Length: 181
Image 1 (cartoon, one colour):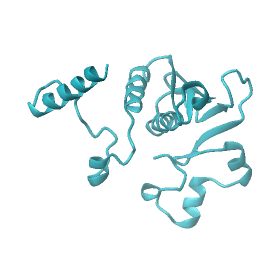
Image 2: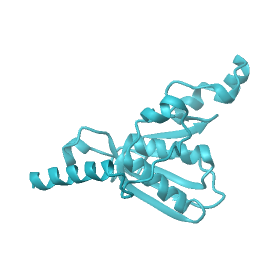
Image 3: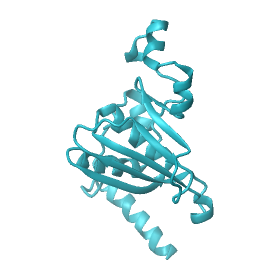
């Protein structure tokens, strides 16, 4: 088995060295500039790319994407949907104990995105387990930023948009701590 894996790795290296066309197309689909585009500022995961492809396929129709993935990837995909105006009808994230079930030291979830053209849901319910029926938290999208706890944020009476106006900050060049972009 190990010999087969080493052979496959060697074949991949030789394919690249021979300038073969059997390599994936590379693109800067997130529009990163300069060094961020070269180094992968987004800490990119192939599952994120795959899920964004699914989103593109489902964006113009009613449908559902349900996938087991890293929680960070689910949040990035959700942020992409919200920022680009994809018709999200509902979003739910069910936490999974990845270390117990898979022996993986990562936050994982069962992520469910429902699509419908023209829908504009800007929240994502978070459930503690797969069998939970009541969300323990709700993510929301406010002023171009993901808010980790919508109820706590709403209780403050603060809005990202209003804060920018008060501080005299242009919305086009601001970055907030804790946003997933």
